[in-house]
Image (cartoon, rainbow, N blue to C red; front, side):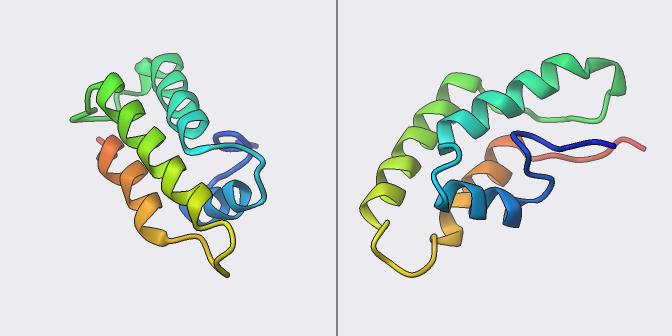
Length: 92
């Protein structure tokens, strides 16, 4: 069974794990790109953004998340970066 990326199978799970300080936005982006590289045979990703730009945005998001740690919930806008960075589509 697929355990997802860093233990998260959905964006919601990733949000919870980031909020619990299990991993950072940057670590999630790095792991996602590693997953893409490891599974090129699937041909399921299109329009992948530049990794360096994605990492820069992830670092900026992480800074905003760390500033908002005292708030009740992690801003969902931050996770929108992951979706925008990857722009994932299935070719199946």
